[in-house]
Image (tube, rainbow over all chains, first blue to last red; front, top):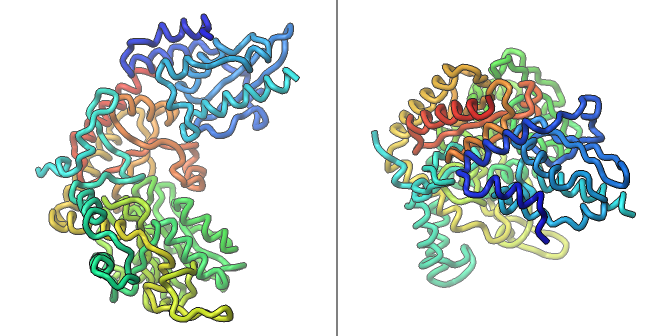
Length: 135
Length: 393
């Protein structure tokens, strides 16, 4: 099923040269609110990424609030997009999501487990949390 | 200047609409058409198992395989081709030595350096040995005067050139010290075999390991040189092709090198190493080394001149790799933008986490060079770095 937030992201990326796509990712990275250092703990870190990634989640009015941060800009850009799509939804909503925007904006290779930004690990972790919360 | 690029079909490729600038040669080198054709010709017209069949094709492939061994033996200055074993790669070579020497190493100590690749760390740990590093200064020069050898030291295992920094270790000095204490030395030549002259007799090492794929040959093939002094160590692997008599009670082994090559080897791979050596020797090893030295020095100097670039390691002799970081930019971010400009580098810890801790960084950007790289490639890298800086400004 198409999703308005993802469609809007795709619209911004489609037709851009590769370098411009990454330029856009960097501008999304700059929009992402940094995580407070006190939450950047070993426990909150996601392994499997060349850059460091931290995750923090909590529930608010039945919705899941997810904070993500990274020490690399490109990873921040990608997670900034990811959060636009997954944040503020119910756990079941998150589990039902088809994250098709990743492939459509040309980041599919970032999903391979070998990729250094560990996007696949990040998504897996979000789904695990959502699954726990949904039950 | 001769254009070697034309010999390598893949280098004509464009990536992301940009001409490919391949600077990830320490990970693997590209293959010249001559090597690709040799592999393809082997499967088209010679393929058969070796040392086994009583038929024409088996004889042809056995001869080519053994000729490849002789070529490698000459290339590294071995006394006898029997000192050359084909393995799956440098990692496999080192693991085989660790496995064979396990009874001696267990509970004892292997002396390494602080720049080692994980493949010259983990196999020794698996064999139950403790590791100790030869001290080095902040530029990664080994402090050979501070080498401490104890009763527990049973092996010195050192890289010839660092896969991260390009620093060349004084291996002859170390084999000299080892000889005084009658301790065997293993040299990991994975990052030097393609760049520097290697003569195992001159070096005085007992084991030398390298991979085919970093010297323009196939992946999945490597070499382990074992000096005749160690020709009776137990094989790490058992199986067909390495035995004399087998009963359920006892097995006797063939002499080296076949003793160490259980199972069907990577025949085409071994032949590809011979083809790669032919390719390089046809150009001329001196000519290659001079060209590589010029390009490497040029690239390094350019990087050192560039503001906001930190270059790691500085030894008298260097080859292959250059590691650096841009101020305030994560190495991964640098690599991603360079990639989109068609420039292939590697980022991360390069399988050398202890070295990263020594350098005080999570990772680096590594540009690594081969015989086909040019000063123009180095210029493209510098241009790429400027672009990276602009994009993250």
